[in-house]
Image (cartoon, rainbow, N blue to C red; front, side):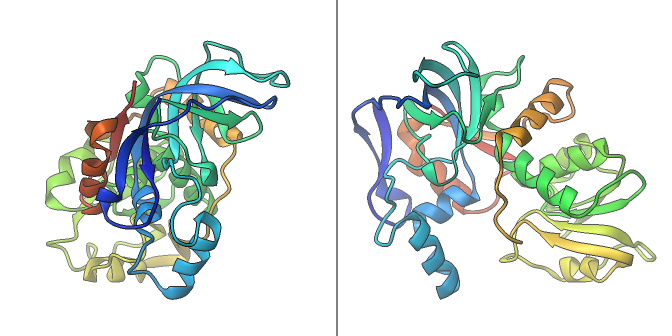
Length: 308
């Protein structure tokens, strides 16, 4: 099978396509034919070894992923595909099932096939969507759902989402509106119409606005882009809190996602609450180019890798 291989940390060019042996599922695993994956910030952090990060952060990541290069040479956190074989102990999945997965440190979705443990973060995928569309939901959707709930989102709250055009940001707009919140989205000028189309009630342009509107106060400020990026507007919004208000970043901890959250996202996607937002699509053969584009940190929503 074809796979994108990464043997050392470095720029996008360290990714290259090879023919490798097709994996065989163990008794508790599913063999999934991968039709689509994505490139997100975590993917390029892993590939690059995040050289500009603090030494402690970099060393902790390498202890988990690999010291000189990734232990698992096939990267990719998100898989959308079809079950083609199941192990003898697998009970809840069958050949032909359409599934999606967040592969955690197992990685492995930049390939035509991957094996997933039944007990891992894998679940039946939403119906009515293409595999590219399915792949565009989990990464941002899982992050947004986790951190909105951590922030206690509920009806009537005023939520500000900084980095609202990112994968997590676009999903956060849709989910916060679903939970009944009033949403202010912060993005660049080229993404104003996008965030409005997703339901944002108010939009601030971080390249033009230095402060929120006079008198505006927020119950929750959700940083959906990470703490490495800031602006005068971001700082001002983080100080424009109602009593009891909170500031939460997607960099606050490492959530442990499960199949339960994927199943919840499946229901929301099938109901039209979560709509896939796709910026660009690349074939697996152009995986390095896709990583180069995402590393510029200007993508809108998600970048999808079409594999089969």
